Image 1 (cartoon, helix red, strand yellow):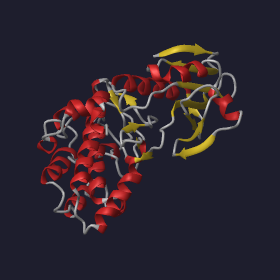
Image 2: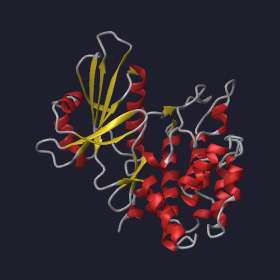
Image 3: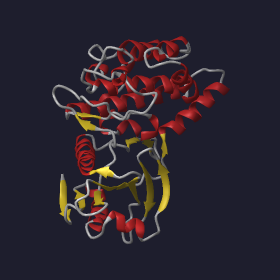
Length: 328
């Protein structure tokens, strides 16, 4: 929940309560606006995506570097509030893996307009890289090793999937569906610790489910999201995306998206299963194809159920939940 609310509705600025280590940044953001910081100069572009661009900057007297996401296209005020709500709620429920929202600002194009520009401030990921870059490197090294997974790489895959299960379970327990699970939306810190960084498609899920189609990225979209008429969607769409990430971690980005380009969503899982390497654990194959890439969302496994799967045998769930699994 916001700790301060500054300005009128035409230029709303929310500063959120955060953990102790972010108090300096929160205090500094209370006396300025995000749009003003970007206009003042000194910010360095550090990323972009379909819904916005990200700039990094250092505030005077604040040791923590900040990242500010600015939406490329005008957004509705209700969408701004939705993103603030799900982001701050999920970060409170899973602070070790969801990057905190420090401040947010909505500036209407003109007074009374139904659209405006959204800005979000968060800590910058120090010396981090997105998971997709790490997976590309990992796949190249596996090819150089004759297609065989090393023990440490298999352990890394298990820890990443375990982290995603924990993060999704926290979101789903609070009625939140992410709807945009993919490696580019996960940053890995200096010690390999993951953090979720994008919430533009996330929504609260009513008891009956979502009637609209979330803006899932191509390649990770569940079969039920392609239906034009009838039916409701829920947290199961995140579990399908988790299965897609599992395929990508084993087969690599290029191979995975070659399936996406050649097959529709109803057959991409069969194509991936046919290419599954023998060096990957059989239990991981069972997890992905028998529990996650299941076409019927009712039969698809939940995050809580996945924790009991044999693939995760030996994984210290308490260490994953606390973040200790990533400590050196």
